[in-house]
Image (cartoon, rainbow, N blue to C red; front, side, top):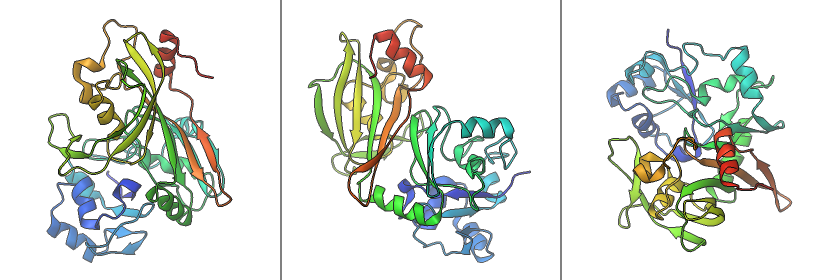
Length: 321
């Protein structure tokens, strides 16, 4: 039996009208049906009735009734194979990935392969598992930003509504500094630089995809630096996104001519190496995140490399201090 979902609004969806949020995440839901669900109070935002035109903010919770989940084409999207709460084994595994926790903030090392939020056909995702990370708090933690399903690393969660609003403001003002590590095929020239290539979403047989679009694309800026290389075969890059567009780093690396290793979506065959020594997984990792503090400076959180990237680093002799 499908249960009600409480879905956290992420920074990427902040500012969307509620009806457009549903159009993005539950495209099978007709507008008339949504209006009826809003009138009857089956759809709510932070426990309160809402209108279709409500502008959402990062950290808010949207109540999604079972009928909407079923209309997306999945028999059950609770995220835990029919369970609304993860079992003891899953809880322990998720809690073991907590890098930091206080009364306001929780920092998680998200594993590669775990989607942050659900969608059509997604039956297991982090947003449905967040009760495992309550740690006796009165409310479940809230997502304030996202990582791609196959990207690992530092992910922030707010433990209160007030903390979610504060963190959302920091992301919106671009005072949060995020650094990613990637292994790419080929070596970019020059070895350091800034990519400023507007990106726009477009149709693709591979699902959601972005592409360069100077006319209609949104600003997308990435700083990069070569940290190591193995001849001209592969390079270890440090990437710092100055904007937060969907798939920005993957698209920019591909446009640079050095796609992220394992990223067939943006790099095609060029994103893979011959032989079976290297994992065919995406080699993109959210390594550090620095939060600004009221006293100046910042608090830095770091996630260790996932096992497949650690093996690749060892294979090519990339040394991590």
